Length: 369
Image 1 (tube, rainbow, N blue to C red):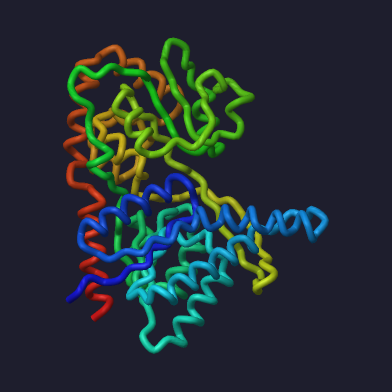
Image 2 (tube, rainbow, N blue to C red):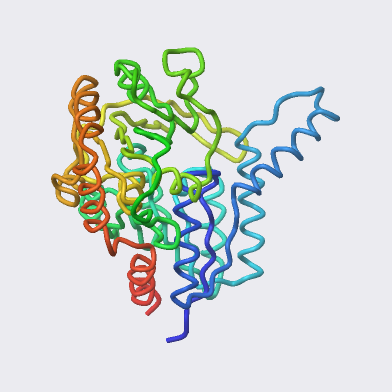
């Protein structure tokens, strides 16, 4: 069988899920797939600037609606797809595309003599459940999810769903040589969700070289300000920081968001968003896997996958006091820290995007039969 022609739509974000799409893209190419990437994030930026200029000139400076920006990006994506004629449309995340775009893609596919298949890589499980359920049940032929329990839920609904845990790229995520100099005692790069901010504000960071990076809206004004540097950090730069950090801190999200769709059309989407507490989750995030691959010790709250994968090669905490105690104790024992870092790197060895790409292409081969 010849290699499938894949049209890979990036997630629409400039970090995190962008990294998933980028590393997966490179791995698919290395495995021999023909891939046409669609950088949705840059298309969104372009359309937002263009529509803003149009509104400035002809709509008395009215702010454009993001739905309009997303819809135009979706139309551009469809145009490129029709020209490329892929075997498979592969969408990473898919949550940035509004429902009218998904409906437009589905309607176009129904009119084609040789329609493409749709593969969705869900990256936000279990935090956006009903949106992901809708995509999986209505628009996808094959679904991958980063949360094992969500795969079970989808399978019970007779959706072809496969578990795709987070991975690392060995060309980017690898341990530092022996004798490395440490820049940080504790390093965290991520998004400042409220539960994370509350935890960090309760820790006494005096005497600890703590670096906080990413987008944390409340950090510049609070007790975390001395440790914070704002801005999106490229993933390869984050990996380099991991290699020069004694401990990488991880805080899993404990709350998600449900979207209740009331009605939608091309011009209007009426919905309500409500937060909810994540009752149970098994899988961890990319931060844990990438940091371990870089040979850093991960300090984390508990998740089933972390405990099974890293075991006692990680530091576990239940609250802010437990986190501070574990960090200070490990920093006082550098030999133990080095040993834990080596064990963590060994534990995740082989959890690579290349291996994921092989599995994905094998399943796509079955899909196209």
